[in-house]
Amino acid sequence: MLSTKGLRATVDDQRKRMGSVFTIRFFGLKLTFLVGPEILSHFYQGVESEISHGNMLDFMVPMFGKEVGYGVDFTTRYEQIRFYSDALTRPSKLRVHVDPMIQEIEDYLAKWGQDGIIDLKYEFSMLLMLISSRCLLGKEVRNKMFDEIHTLFNELDNGMRLSSVMFPYAPIPVNRRRDRAHSKLSEIFTEIEDVLQSLIDSKYKNGRSTTEREVTGMIMLLLFGGKHTSTVASTWTGAHLLSSAKSLTAVVEEQKQIIQKYGDRVDYNVLSEMNTLHCSIKEALRMHPPAAINFRKVHKNFTVKTKEGHEYEIPRGHTVASPILFNSNLPHIYKDPDVYDPSRFGRERQEDKFGGKFTYAAFSCGRHTCVGEAYTYMQIKVIWSHLLRNFELKLISPFPETDWGKLVPEPKGKVMVSYKRQLLPST
Ligand code: HEM
Image (cartoon, rainbow, N blue to C red; front, side, top):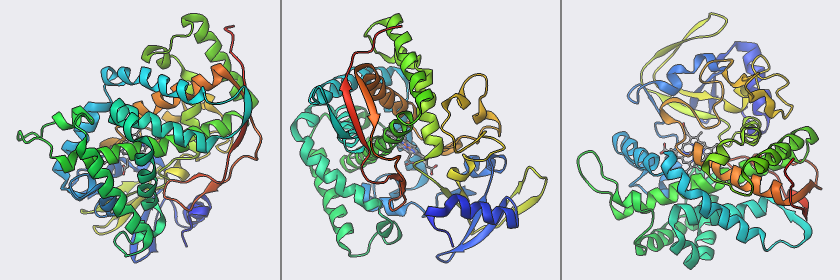
C-alpha cells in the first residue's frame, strides 16, 4: 500500500484513520509510522542498544565496503563519523574549502557562452563532482583522473536504485557494475598518497590507525554524501527560485547588499551573512528532503505520547519510520506548506522551531545528524551566489515533477534554463 509517489497522501490517509502512530505491513516488516515531530525524541536520541539502523542500510555495504559505515559495528562506525566530522564540520576546516570551490565554479562557468540554454541538473551534477573531487580528494586527484572517477562514481550511484536496495547481492547487471566500480575506485584511491590526509591520519581511541581499505571506503561514502544530495538540492533550489519572482528578488537584493559591503570578496564569513540564500536552500530541502523517510529498528519496547495525549507502546522487533517528507509539510507547523516561502525560516517566523527540536529533519536530528550539513550549505551558497552575481537566469521548461524511481528523489527529466551573462551591480 505504500507507494513513494503517494507518500504524503498515504500517510495522511492512515493518520486520519488511525492517529499519529500506526503500523502497516511492508514486505514482511511491521512498519510503525511516527507522525509529527512531538513523538520523535526516542527515534532520534535513543541509545543504540535500544533503537538503531539495524540492517536497514545494509545495501550500502557493497557500495562502500565492509570496513566502513554499516559494514562495521556501531563503536567503530561512531568513531569513523568522528573522523568525518573532524575533517568537515569545524569552521577552520570549512574555511579552507571556499577558495577551491570558487575556483572550480569560475573555471567551469567560464566555458559557458555569453548566453545560451543549459540543463541545470546536468550542469550541477558535473560541477559538484568537480568540487567534491577537489575538496574531498585534493587537487592532484581532481586533475589526474576526474573523468574516470566520474564514470565509476555514476556506476556506484546506480547502486541506489530500488532493485539494489531491496536485493543488494542479487547477481543482476546493476549490482555487478556497482561492485566493479567499488573495486576500481578502491584501487585508484589506494594509489594516491595524499587523499584526504586527515582521514589517513585519524586514529581510533585505542590508538589504531585507519587502514587503507577503511580510508578508501570512507572517501567513497563522503564523495557520495557530498556530491549527489547537493546536486539534487541545488537543482531544486534553482527550480524554485526561478519560479518565484518574490524569492528570486529577495536573494538578488541580498547579493547586491553584500557586494556593496564586501565587493567581490567571497569567503567563509561573507557566506555566513547570506541568510536569505541559506533559507532558500533550507526551504527547497523542506519541500524535497533527499531522505524522504528515515527508518530505525526497535530493540527495546518504548512509549510515545502524541500531542493529543494518547500513549502507544512500540514493541521490540518493529521497524519505526519518521516520514520526513510528511512531517515537513504539516500545516499546523508550516503555513501553506505547498508554497515555496523561504521567509518562513526568518527571524520573525521561525516555523522550524514550532514543533520542538525535531521539526526540521532534512539532515536528520540527534545522534545521527548529518556531518555534512554546514559543508552542504556552504557549497550550495558558493554556487548560487556566483550564479546570481554573474548571470540572468530563466527557467524555460515546466517546473519539474519528482522522480521517485531513485532512493534520493530528484527532479524528473531535464531542468532547462536560459542564461545571459550580466554582472550584478551593488544597490
Ligand atoms: C543536501 C545535502 C544532504 C542531506 C539532505 C543529507 C542528509 C543526511 C541524513 C538524513 C543523514 C542521516 C541518516 C539517518 O539518520 O539515518 C545523513 C548522514 C550522513 N551524511 Fe549527509 N546529507 C547531505 C549532505 C552531506 C554531505 C555534503 C556530506 C559529506 C561531505 C554528508 C555526509 C554524511 C555522513 C558521513 C553521514 C553519516 C553516515 C553514517 O551514519 O555512517 N552528507 N545525511
